[in-house]
Image 1: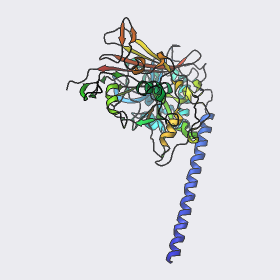
Image 2: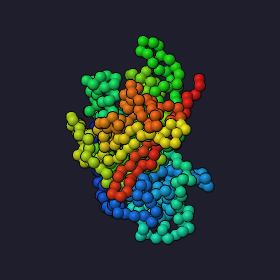
Image 3: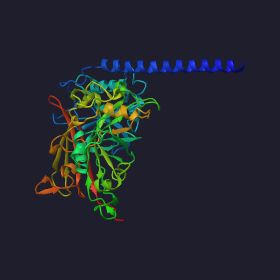
Image 4: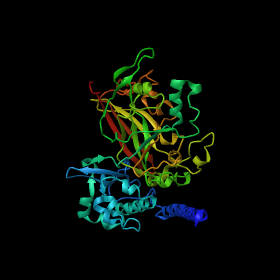
Length: 469
């Protein structure tokens, strides 16, 4: 056949490969369109204000039938972690009722509700999530008798939250932290570089972020040990080693990734929503004095890795849809790959309180709102994958510190005390500049509906003394 034979073989192979790739791309686009169709077709009214449950629920509860967040829990009589849904003061054990998920998408995938984490369910995609939500609202509603009228099943399936131990909701493979609050970035930049140079030149062009570590992401209630490390208290003297003196919280939120993407294939902005499962509260603990000494040139390292606390309940994006608000105005306009005109930020009221050790009460130090975020979650995920970086179900992407425009909405002690230059009042004559040993930091958040709340519960963590070294 000679050279021409080889050339013909290569050409045919290349054409066939190209056709296969085009076909695969077409299938992916069609699947994406089908996902959007099926989600919009499934029980459009499943977030209505007037929906009721047969479970008695206070109007102040974070977990009405309009919410139904997912978590992982265990109980004294069953130490196996399993998936549950919060409803009022109870948990619906999905491992007990998984046989009732009989819709077209989940009837052959009921085993996802028998797992020890949410990863498998997260990976099923939005159509399956929406079908599950519809089933849950039917089972917990006032009209469906399958759970309501079966006392034996109810006794096995409904567990008091007060008797449960919560676990991380997913196995977190990777964790990324962004820096997406304009007010926070401006405040911190002003402190360290002056008002004229507060924002770095890239900040309004891309969602700034860094790859963190997943190993020390912990569930709410886990104590956090004050870290030891190198600091340089005086710029004209050598560094010293010892306990962090400027321990801080960072008010954040984070979202879990659903279906992942293939390595080398970016997630486009119009498809990003298909890959976002739900949100949690976050406190990204920070050692400010360690950070100051170490962060040049590669960013924070030991100043961040001692712990990141998240709330145990994952509130789905479908539950949050009634609380969509206009996106933060962006100027200059983002590059086309980051541009989207649909709303994708949310009116989530956030609060941070500090409870000193031995105190009977806590003092609120911050009231902020997720709507202050400059970059949206769609933009964060799209930018994260534009290089072809693959994400996987259960990966965690955090917002960065959420600060608002007023002093009481600043999302860290660094800002609230303005680098330690003033005190923050906790009430009863107690003040703070940074977090002290024994302090319990309590992050909470909710969306306010008409007569109900869609809430996240709390993310708490108590600071323990540094190890003596």
